[in-house]
Amino acid sequence: MVTDPVALQLAADLFPNGISRYAVGGLLVGLGAAVIYLGTGISAGASTFLESTLSYVSDKSRFQRYVSSRDWRLVFTAGIILGAAVFAATFQSGVVTSSLYQPGTTGQLYEVGGVTLWTTDVQPWRLLVGGIFVGIGTRIGKGCTSGHGVCGVGSASKTSIAGVLTFLAVAIVTAQLVAALGVSP
Amino acid sequence: MADRHPLFIPLILVGGLIFGFGLGFSHMARPEVVLNFLQFEDFGLLFVMFGGSALVGVVYFLAPRLFGRAPLTGDTFERRLKSFDRNVLIGGAIFGVGWGLSGICPGAAYASLGTGNITILWALAGMFLGAYFQGYWRS
Image 1 (cartoon, rainbow over the protein chains, first blue to last red):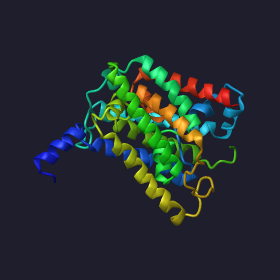
Image 2 (image 1 turned 135 degrees about the horizontal axis):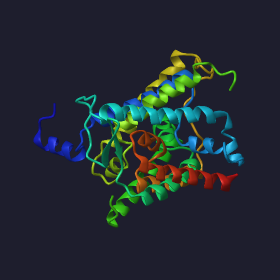
Image 3 (image 1 turned 30 degrees about the vertical axis):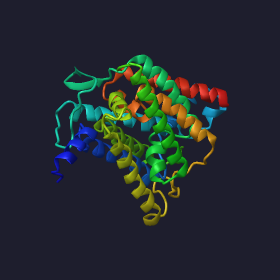
Image 4 (image 1 turned 90 degrees about the horizontal axis):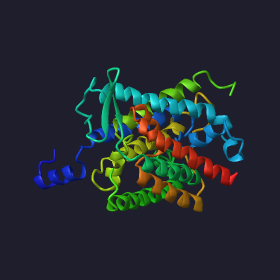
């Protein structure tokens, strides 16, 4: 245990919400990707779903190349939504508690049928405009936080490490600029 | 597709469930938490990415050594290695602008919807629009 007061204060400053929910959540994200990999050999990324699903409605060649994987990518995304809904019905609703899970104070909680749901305070224009950049950038850049960040970094891929360092650095500068301009939330 | 192993789709679903539960549990499905990280107010998110990639790293290292081929597809276990070119940096930078502005990435957006975040549909609509623009342009 760390008992030095200076170190404790530093930890509280860097990690005001502790680290357990982040570490446990991250391990579960990795476990989900590992389960799929062990069974199928597939490195599952989340952003390819955007293009593979567009292949149902557009015959552009860029989307049609994903026809063979579009059905299981729909299932993967449905699983992600359902898994998060299970989290909402358990820990987010307070039905299940653990010393490893620290509830947050961000956004708004609301109840539907006994389940505590959550919604963001971040303004819709930021989500829409940011989302457009995310949709363009992840597909041109060959991956997102899961494909490059989890599977690529886990593969010690130099391409993925370069991709992660690029989007992380640009995202930090962007978020700090937007905050400095007084945009909140 | 017809010759797929009957457990292929169920396994993808189970993997997605664990993945999405983890994104909810870690609060990475909350744009506010991602923005707090990017603004240096809470560094906890580092543990999500590195926790996930560390576990994946061990599994990716061990799987080809312990097992010959993936049981449900018969495929060999390969690392996720993509070729490097300018697009990785250009696309990464565009993604970074979007992530820094919105605080949300694709997998976290799907999970966010599952936690009840109806407002995140704005981001999902944006992501589909963006993916469509680049696909239209590059086809």
